[in-house]
Image (cartoon, rainbow, N blue to C red; front, top):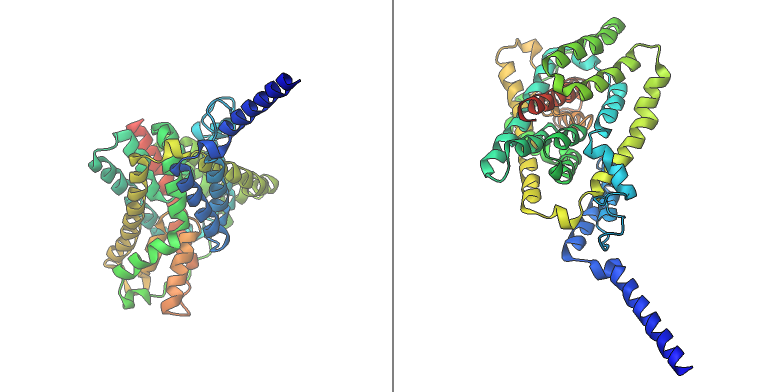
Length: 389
């Protein structure tokens, strides 16, 4: 009897020891703790500060999920074949989620502000300097190949889905770092851009009142997604998945005969995909694969790319104004909106304008380069893909 009791006790002790070895406490490292802290910061910014909560909340919680330590082989990690998270991550790795996001963006976007003043499209193109600036900076570090530099460069477009799509094609191993950097800095647009805008503009320039935008006919709105798609897709066929879905979504909205489809694309569909993309991108930041010199360098370059993009947009407006009549001048405060963080960048323009003149409403004007930036970043991604793939 004593023998049985002794054997049973050893059996229980052994099983408890095995169980303990499988717990997160036994497998935790300082890296897991650091990443969990970052995840909590994301949740704080999304909930308490209300900075892009639709992005930061699922990403922040995804970081928590991805950094619960576990014993390899349990088929629970996002990089373990056969795990549920790995199946969900398939949409990121294969570039499935970004086109669906673009479909929803197209269904939600009104291009009237851009169509009413076509000059604003050029501002959206100028702000893509951030992409090519980050690309050259990445190459200059000597840490990255040309393909990796292209993936990092797209962070400067301030477009998370585009960054994920391009990185999945050029440098899948950098997906977590690039995606987190892109979405993080998108949320920080209200913090990053104002100092640059103040530094580059004079008081007189900030007080410029722009002419009210003209009314855009429904015919123009219907024709634009068709013509816009044909022009951009023929120019950069490699951007077809993003451009095609973006303009399809907009056509569903503007055609007037597919309201239910547009509502689905711009509502339930984009919400579902946003949850999945945020969750899986966050979970891909496992400390064991994420905390590397390359990943941390990506974050640094991403921050610089946003400064370059804001600088490019604002300075381009200032140069344009040299050739415009007084009544047609553009307020340089909308130059920042050339990045495709819609509508966060346009709201920054609005808030800055009202800070210096309570009657200077820049939102509708800023939405022109803002939506042009969405197209511009997709075209830039297509160019990068065409050259580097």
